Structure formats: C-alpha cells, structure tokens
Length: 435
Ligand code: NDP
Image (cartoon, rainbow, N blue to C red; front, side, top):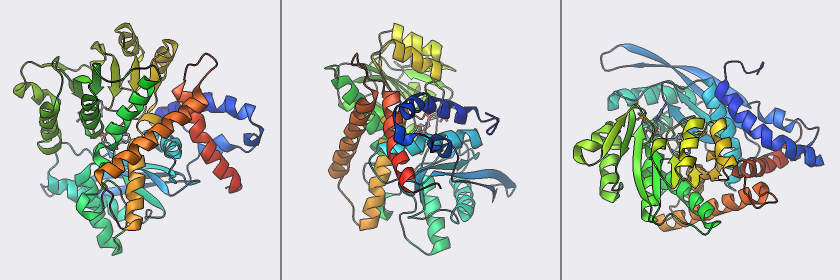
C-alpha cells in the first residue's frame, strides 16, 4: 500500500492473487525465499507520455498515454490498449498484472502488458479518432515491436482504432509486422479474433456446467455490457440454446423477455459498432423490451450471469440477489467485474464462478494465434481458429480444476487460475535468475 498509493484497483488485483498464491508458496519449497511474488508485482517498466492532437475545431487537445510492460518471463509483453476517460495508472497496472497470469494460463508464450489513454472516443469523429491514434502511436512505436511488445484492443479500442494505429506504426517504421493484434482481415488479422473473448467465456462456462451434468440449453442468461465481449458472448450463448434477456451500457440495461436472438443481436451490433449509439435505442425497434435507466441487470432472474462490461460492476448486494434468484453459474467476460465481497458470496453459495483471467482468456489466446499466423505469413480458417480456441479454453478449465479442486470436490476457480498462472511464470523466472 505504501509503495502504490492511490492505486485501489491494482491493490485489489494483487490481494486476490496473494491470498491464494501465498499458501501455495508456503507448501512448495522451490518457490520460497526468491521474492517471486514481490518481483511479479513490480512492473518491468512503465511508460507514460503526452498525446497531443488537434480536434475538428482546430483546437489542441492533450491526453495521457501509458504502456505497462509488466512481465516478460514467458514471452513478449502482450495485452490490450484501453481508451476511456477513467484510465489511470492503477487501472492499467491491475489489468497488466492480471494479464500476466491470464497469458500464462493460455498455454501460449506471451508475457503480460497493458496500456491506453484517458481519451474518450465517444462523440469524436472518425478523423479525430484517427488523429488521436496517430499521435498515440508516434510515441508508443518506440517501445513496442513484434518480438518485444504486441498490444491489442480493449474498452474503446476496436478494429477501427487498431487499423489507425497499425497504419501509423507502418508509416513510422517502414515495416509490415504483427506488432498489433485485432487487425483487419485484409492486413494480417485472424478470423474469430473479434468473437474470441465472448465465445471463449461461453465455452468456459459450458465446461463448468458440464462438471454438473448441465449445459446452456434452455437456460436464461443475463449479460452486462453491449460492446465486443458482450455481443459475442450473447451470440454463442444463444447458439448453445440459452436465452439471453439483458444487455447494458454505462447508462442502463435493456430487458427482453423473449430473448435477444440473432436478428436482434445484429441490431445491437449496428447500434453500437456502426451508429455508435446507446443500448436504450434497442427499445425503439423492439418495443416489447424494457429499458431501465441507471440500473444494472443483476436484479433479473437468471440461471447464468455473464458480466462483460467493466471492473467492479457486480457488488455484494447484487451477488446476493443473483444467488437468491437461483443463478448457478457466473463466468466473467470482463476483467475483475465482480467485487471481492461478491466473489465470496458466490463461493460461499458453492456457485460455479470463473474469474476473468481464466474465462476471458480466449481473446488474448486468439491474439496469440494471430501472432503465430503473422510469423508464418499464412491464415487459418475460421473453423481451425475456433477449434484451437475451444481446445485452449478446455485446457484452461482443466488447469483450474487441477489446482482449485478441494477435498469435497468443489472447484475454486479463482485459486485454480491464480496458482496455475503463477507456476509457469514463476518457473521461468527461477530459471532466468534474479532479474
Ligand atoms: P467495448 O468498448 O467494446 O465495450 C465496453 C462495454 O462496457 C460497453 O457496453 C460500455 O458501455 C460498457 N462500459 C464501459 N465502461 C463502463 C462503466 N464504467 N460502467 C458500465 N459499463 C461500462 O469493450 P470490450 O467489450 O472489449 O471490453 C469489455 C470488458 O472485457 C473489459 O473489462 C475488458 O477489459 C474485457 N476484455 C476484453 C477483451 C477483448 O478481447 N476485447 C479481452 C479480455 C477482456 P458504454 O458504451 O456506455 O461505455
């Protein structure tokens, strides 16, 4: 706390890992007296920089850019860029720390990183977003590279932004390499990358449900968010026979008792990705649905909950409401959406609960597959990538069970994910000496 003042999200993420990993270290001699956890919480380096750009009115604007290069023990730094006004050092350090464990879990050789800026893409024209991205990349390009650090998208950074940043990197370096993932298909992107985080979260939830002889078929599903992760979680949950009844944004949620089917989801994608509108616009086209301004969807009765918006969006009271309403499974699509008190509520009720670092790892895993395709200079089919994604999610689930199952047979997926993620990074750090 003394070393990292005013960083509540970072401290929250570290505490959650420490609570499960310290007892494991105490039981395993080889990890003792090497300051492993102490070294892991210290970033390899943090880069902070000014991003100046000119808006459509000709006025100069200034934002702050960041890249946290957290840990490179098992591969080049890898993790998304977030553009949102709430971005600060604490949030990016928490995300980079989580990313290190998540990337380790994927079975692919990727270290942990995260970055972004306190820039708000909402209400900005395409030209403004492009000028911002070009200015941001002008500095970031000095610190990244296909074998050093490979950023991707996150909140506020989708295909449009990655495209603008890739164009600027190429212009500055005169080099066509896989320096970013989440690229367009015509310039090195991977099929299934846009779908991967949402699909992966549902595959993970499906694996958890199978341990209880259950599945998505016939289940009512509550989803939060309406961005990239929420959209594809909704699509896959529906394909597997679930009925998704909510989606949300930072202003409120919509409830559609008939379910958000393929056609309705296509409308959500149009609203959010093309018109860049609000989820409340949904009820204009589908008046049977209801919009609840200023509320979150956890009050809706469901079997499965998929928080896919942002950190700390599901608190203790809301967790109690979900349990009381008979929810059996919660899989995080977002990073750390469930507060620590709420996680305890789920675990005490013996719910199937998956932390984001396990259940949303499909996105970065598919980014890893994009890096492989870029290195090989070839592209795999959708089916091939989807099969690999499924295999990776199954492997992550198996690792969580291996390290998280207790004597009674209950699987603590938080403990399982933390320890499995820790072991691989710790072994690499031990082998590489005190660095
Ligand atoms: P998008 O920008 O596509 O969508 C974000 C969604 O979350 C929007 O619906 C947004 O609503 C909502 N949201 C953002 N901030 C808040 C807030 N403070 N309160 C309530 N709702 C909010 O981002 P993604 O879908 O890519 O990311 C969602 C989550 O998933 C994040 O936690 C991200 O870190 C995580 N994640 C994403 C991966 C990816 O591949 N994209 C990979 C792994 C994790 P609004 O439009 O009102 O802001």
